[in-house]
Amino acid sequence: MQTTITGRHMELTDSLREHALSRLEKLDSEFPRLQSAQVILDVEKHRQMAEVIVQAPNHVVVDAKEETSDMYASIDGAIDKAEKQLRRIRDKMVDHKSQESLGELEAELEQRQSVAE
Image (cartoon, rainbow, N blue to C red):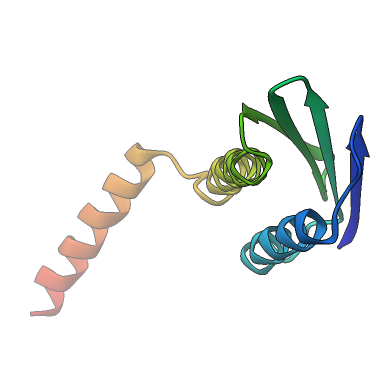
């Protein structure tokens, strides 16, 4: 996964860069097909903002923002939001069968089991 970390109105320290990269590695291990991730860190007076933009196959783009008084907490919050959005998208793609058809399948399996006995 390509990773870009950008700092606006601030000097990007090695510890911030390492923290963001370590959190993105965990995200990449859970969602291995991610193509790229961009982390934008911004400071305005006492507002520490982090924005995470993740691109995945099939034109899936996830954008998550978090604003706190601590940059590390902002990074964690933004990545957590992006992870939640990716999980929701993945579950929609995987869980594409309706509940009615699942109920019919269960009834059919019960019928076959009773006939087999």
